[in-house]
Length: 183
Image (cartoon, rainbow, N blue to C red):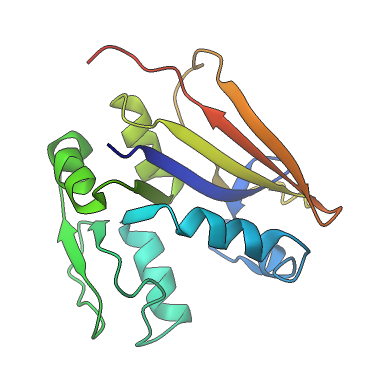
């Protein structure tokens, strides 16, 4: 059975986007050695994607009419009405993430569910005890403000560092496993 994984890039000061959802700070690192290989390796194990409505809106604004994840089922948690681009396998839902977790895992098959973000959606999975792993690429930039990596209200139990690697001498990828709470 698959796991729920949060695969994300973050600034050194813990933000995944600027206050106005700008990702220019991140996109300048697209060509860093090892980054595309890391993404490809991760995506090979993804069977289903879950994202929030703001992330979906950002993708549609920056890649109009083009869906970046063809062939992979995607669930968008949103309170807004959106349409799906041609050729995509997108389900729009609203409600508690626990209600949809079994369906996400079923769509993933023997692979994992990628919790794309944003951080608010991933925090809902974490608060429900459904976030299993975080793979965070630390980008050497400070934003000072923005969308937080994982906006939880309180401290977590210690996470287990599974692995770490340097990407191109610029970024560090940290793979953590979260302690699982009894359901």
